[in-house]
Amino acid sequence: LVGCQELIWGGDRDCEHQWGNIIKGKEYGRHDTNDPTSTDFGGWANWDGGTGNQAGYFCSLCGAWEGAFGLEPTPKLYVQHTIEILREIRRVLRKDGVVFWNIGEGR
Image 1 (tube, helix red, strand yellow):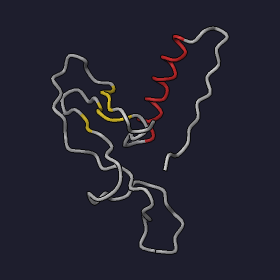
Image 2: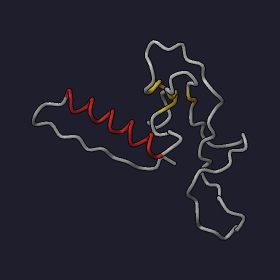
Image 3: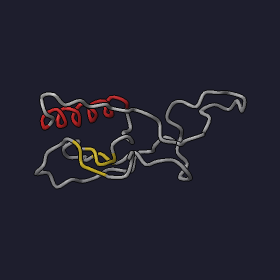
Image 4: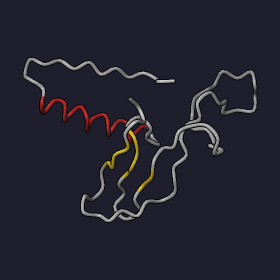
């Protein structure tokens, strides 16, 4: 489940992390335009502290990110974490094993 488990991704395992400010997450259902008839729901909204998800924290010392898979603040970070997870799955999967990776939006 997206956002149900926060982990520390990347960085230095021995670092005594100093976490920065919370990263503003995407606010679901919000238009990123002033036009109320717009159908553009994409992009990162300006989070106002109301609804929406928190996108974690970065360590100012080693660059580690603390947050839940699926709530990464950038697509690049999401892809990096997806690759990391799939490599671990491949490591333990039988030679004849199959993985189906379902990517969907969990609104």
